Amino acid sequence: MHLKPVIAANWKLNHGPTDAKAFLQRFLAQVPKLNDRTVIFFPSAITLTTVTEGLRDRPEIWVGVQNVHAEAQGAFTGENSVLMARDAGARVVLVGHSERRHVFGESDETTTKKMALIAQARLTAMLCVGETLAEREAGHTADVVERQLAAGLKELDDQQIGAIMLAYEPVWAIGTGRTATPEDAAEIHGVLRRALASRVGDKVATGIPILYGGSVNRGNASQLLAASDVDGLLVGGASLDADGWAGIVRA
Ligand SMILES: O=C(CO)COP(=O)(O)O
Image (cartoon, rainbow, N blue to C red; front, top):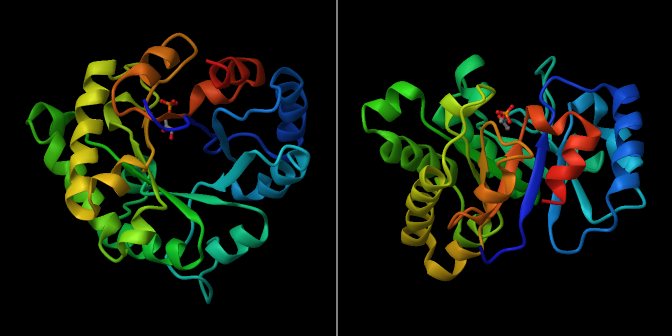
């Protein structure tokens, strides 16, 4: 691994403001200033400002949102805007998480729009890609992640592509306790790196962090991070406990 590792917590639909305050107090007491890695929290939109305020003295830790609407504003009751997320202190936005794709029916066309909108807002997009178990068993993993990647990059110029992050999250590994092996992760991260390079050239492609996500825990974090082309981790369940998360961040 050549890039500064990116270690990200996706809290999904967990931790309201009260929990988040207590979490941060406990977490920050265990984790000194981090210069050799980028840590990101993705709380719910309701908890975003609690987390940005709780991290006011730790500007090296980033905060992001789990989703934004494909339009920046308008009559879209219940949605969250990239501009409001930026205003509230978010620096990064998850796009196309497997739960968005598979639970909420988010299409490739929608990820195309969101990626363009986030780039225009000058925030960092973290595009998530990953195959289902059926797709893997049919031998389609590379095709699926390349298609999802191409959709995400479709409307971006080279400079905008250079500013994104990617996350490979095989759907069959998310929340199942079934982790990809470091070899599985390295293989698909290599596919993604080559696809990026063919679009923007080697130099830009090697600067784009590619995170692995799916049942990462304290026991497997170091091994996964050591795999080739794995530049970080996107962690769900194991990021919910402050002590456990502090352990992964220090891995
Ligand atoms: O979806 C994930 C992170 O975005 C992974 O979730 P788990 O770590 O709970 O498998």
